[in-house]
Image (cartoon, rainbow over all chains, first blue to last red; front, side):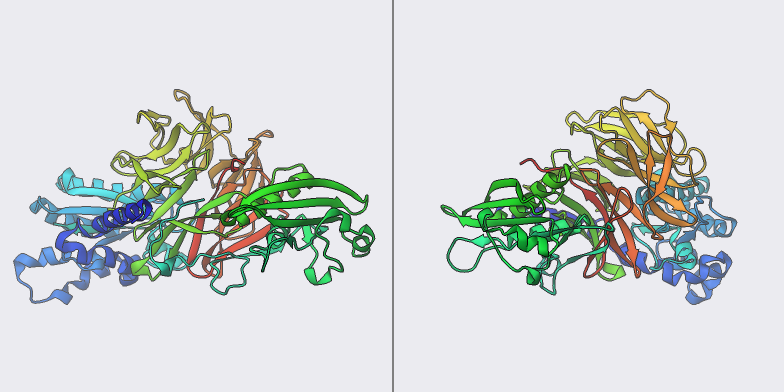
Length: 186
Length: 437
C-alpha cells in the first residue's frame, strides 16, 4: 500500500469516527434529521404555537416522559428548530416557550448535552453567513443559560448556508433555512 | 504532479472538459468574448515518432487561447495546409484565410518517456517569426506542457503572463440531501486533471492556496465542529491548525506563506480576525468589535488585511494593519452589502460580493479612486470571487437553473466563460498562483 493511499484510509477512518462516534444512541435523531428538519417543520416557520400544539401525537404517554418526549432528546424535529428573520439573530417571541421547555428539561437533566446548530440562508457570502449562524446559535445558548441550563451542557456550531434544511432559492426556502437546530446527545 | 487521494471510483470521474467523453466532469462554455477576437491558426503539431501521436498539443493550445476570449482559433477543417515547421509556412495561404497569427510545431520523442515540443509563432501580415521555442516534456506531463506552450504564445502576443498552466481549487457537493458528499478538488485552470483532495459528508469550505502553490488551507466540519486544516497537495498529509471553540474559518495565507489570517469566535457570538503564525502557533488579534469580522485577505505587500465587517450595521469591506494595534478603516461605501474582498495581483482593485438592487453580484472596487465600484456580473446569487494570478480574470460561483456552477469574467467585465459539473453543485473557486517553471 502506498503512503498516499494509507494516509487517505487514516483520514477516512477519522471522518467516519467523527461522523458516527460521538452521538451514541442519539445519532438516530442527529445527522439524518438535520436535513429533513426544514421540510418537516415547514408549518412552524411562521407559527410556533401550532408546533407546540402537536402534543397529541404522543398522547397516552405517562406524565414523567411527556416533557422529555416533547422537549428533550426525543422531541419531534419541529420542536427542535427555531427560525429567524432575515439578517436577524434575536429569538422571537413565538419560540420562547419552546426554548423554555427545552431549558427546563436540560436544567433537570444536567448530564444531557445539546449541540446548537446555527444556519443561514444562501444569500450573500459564505463565511459571513457562518457569522450569522453562529450569532443565532449563541442567541439560543444565552436564552437557555438564562433558564438555568449549565454552560457545559451546550455547544454551538455554525454551518452557515452549508447545510440547508430545504433546497430552493425563494423567500419561503430562505425563511426555513435561517434557523437553529437543537441536537441532543447523551 | 498532484498526488490525489482517490476515494471511491464513483466520485472520481473527473476527466478533461475538452475531451469528447460524455463522462467529462466539467464543461467550459464561452459565453461572450471581445467583439473582435484575433483570428489565429494553431496547426496540428507534427509527430515524429511511430504510431499515433501520444497527445494533441495544438488542440489544448487552441482551446486555451479561445477561452481567453481574445483569440478565435481557425477550425481545422478550414486549414488548407498543415505545416509543422516555419519553412513550410506559406503566408499567402493564411492571409487569404484572414488569419493574423499562425502557430506550427512538432512533437519529437526523445529517450525514455521524454519529449521535445518545438514550436514557432508567426505574424502572418508581416511574414515574420515572433517566437521560436523548444519545450521539454514527459509522457505524464504533455497536457501541462501544452498549457505552457499556450502561456508562452499568450505572453508573446499580449505582453501579459498566461494563466493556462495554473490550477484552481473548488468544492463540489453531490448526492441526496440526507447524504451530501462534499469534495475539495484541485484541477487545471481549464478544469482538466481534476483530483479529489478531500471527501467528506461534513461540509468543506473556503479553500485557500499557499503562495507557493504546494498547500491548501480549508475549513472542515468533521466531528460537528469547524476547524482549519492545511493539506500538502503532493503527499496528502494534513495538519489541523485551529480547532478553537466556536467558529474557525476563512483562512488566508500571508504573501510570505508564514501566517494565516483566520476568523475565530472563541465561544463568543462575535467573529474576529486573527493572524496565526503557522510555525510557532502565535495568535495575534486584529479586530475587537462586537460584530461579524471575517473573510480576511492580505494586501499584496502583506501590510494590510481587507475583511468583511458588519460593525456599521451592514456588511462592508474594511482594511486593518496586519501587524495589529490599529483601528480598521472602511473601504467600501457604495451599496448596503459589500463582502468577501479579494485584492487583484497588482493591488489596485478589490473583487467583492455586492448587493446590486437585490441581486448578489461580483463587483470590482477601485482602491486608487476611493472605492469606485463597477458591477462585473449579472447573476442573482454570485459569490466567492477569486482573481487569476495575472489579474486579467475573476473566477466566481454562480447559479444556472438552480445548480451551482463556476464562471469567469474578465476584470473589465467583457469576457465570460462558464464551468459546470455534470452533476451536483460546484462552488468556492480559488485560483492558484503561477507555477514555478
